Image 1 (spheres, rainbow, N blue to C red):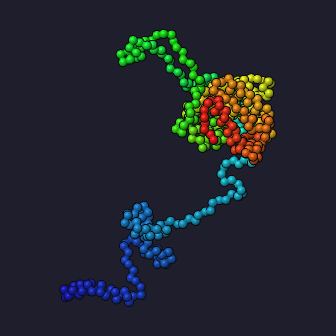
Image 2: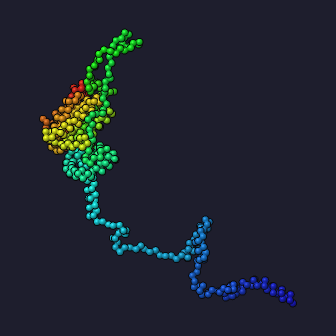
Image 3: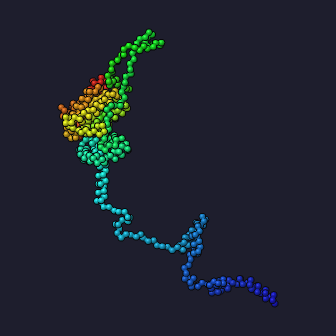
Length: 479
């Protein structure tokens, strides 16, 4: 009996699982799960009221672990969406706040100070006045060397007292030193390099030229020996009285020009000299026996060597081109005061009898240019100034007076010929703007009263050819 009861009990235990689904299906609800001892079943109503988790989202503890632990390369792509959903559940979203706006929209948003337009204008004017005091000397020099006209006259009249005031206070000294250190010297009104004086300084024109001159070799008189003149076995016999050869003319004569060795003609000067250079280029344009080099520079002259040093520039041209003829025409910009030896101020005076110092100093500069060119073996044709018109700012009577200086120095220097342009560009020594050329009335001078137009400078250049050929016994083969 006992064995049969045990077998029934074992069969009932093995058959219980097969009948469990039918019993669960027939029941009204799921069978509650057995809880381990010590735990309390949650309230069903509370569970239903709680928000449902998103399907597939991890729990809060797992989401925290996912945030703390970085995902691997493989799991980053696969679990990125789940991690984002878990983070959204864990971290509540905080709404962004709009930036606080100031009460007054026109008020500045930073702590910088704002100045009125009047204060800014006052500071700008103060800075301009300080700069004007420091740079007054350079501005005054630039104004003096500017093109002659109303603009230059007004600028000089305004800047002259300011420059004098700056020099009296010794304000311009640091600016001059800075310009010298930067190498701004020699042109444009800048101070001379190495000179740190407080007043306006200029380049001192050297009293002697550095252009190399031609030196004749010494002559050795060789007398006749027993075996002939320096024969194969003969020795020279030095003896007898020294023989002095005749001094050759200087500058040397110009050889007959050829197409292979043409005459080199260098034209220099100021803006009027530029005009004459154009005329010489037109006259010799079809002549293969004359080579014209035009090196005129406007707004230059001999008075302001600190702005443009013609003696130094001419020395460079003489070494570079080796001209046989130098044509010079300048002086319209020289009616102004200048400095000599760096600090000695010489004021301009008209007429010359009022103060002859300026005229003597200017004549020395003209003589220096002539001597420099002739020492290099060149013949010089110095062209005087023509009369100036009523619109010109050149002082009345200055062209004729300065042309007298050119003439007197040309007579004193061998190899220099003076030519008066007034005989060509005027009517009985008076200003004229028009002239009859070839049967037609042509305008030869500009309305500014100074410069030459093409009919005028071509006419002047043609009239220079005959005096050149007669003075230097050369055929320039024109016409």
